[in-house]
Image (cartoon, rainbow, N blue to C red; front, side, top):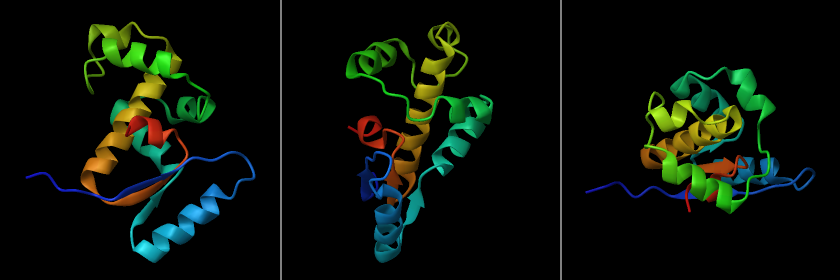
Length: 121
């Protein structure tokens, strides 16, 4: 039987207070808050340089791009031919999505930004 974790995602825009709301909510619920830490985790798991994640952080991506990339991607295999042939920004995007999914499978938490709501949809 799979664990059912409670995952709360908070989308945000500059000045919206998403980080502060997420911090308070995580404290009240007694769970971990993930924000920029998700970039560190994705960089470590994928082997892609962390600076590249920061450069491509929260760039707008439409759902067509997401579905196109996900259709050609073979779930977490960073050495597969489809992954190796992708543009760098797609690789960063996928690595971040994979890390978000792994965190959600592992524990209850609050995730701020990083398109976590799309990754877990």
